[in-house]
Image (cartoon, rainbow, N blue to C red; front, side):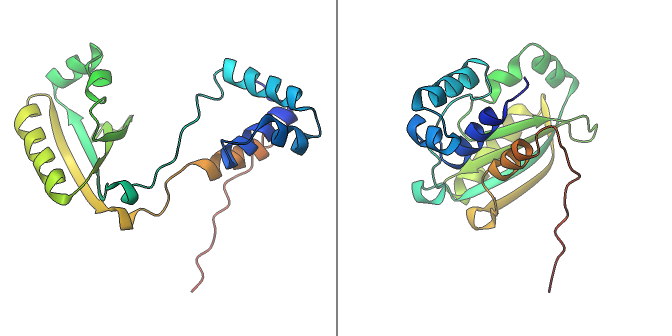
Length: 177
């Protein structure tokens, strides 16, 4: 989809504040609230905006432990995945996200969240016992919520929208001591 300047500015405003009203967006764009509403509706209908949701603080609601797992399906596991089993499997509440990669060593990367290290340990013990014929966990990287440095891709979304059709090479920020 080709985005107009007003569509990009609307998306930037919504990334920064998903609760921004059509009046607020209209003022920013110097158009009517109805015009801003039409832009928002067009972006929703086109599937650019998938929805609006609350961003919760993991620790505040009791999720304190996380893990990233590198997973390799067995031959039987690949068959299960091809039949749509992965889509059903990742609906489990502890799975935050998963990625299918072209890497032969660990073609699946899965992120998990847990209330405690005990819950994490019990989950992975059960996972190994119940899925060994389908999956091999190549590596597991557990960490606590204090180890999480960034919780969103919003900065990337804003960069891409601001540089729309004027892509620039990523700027590497030097480390200063």
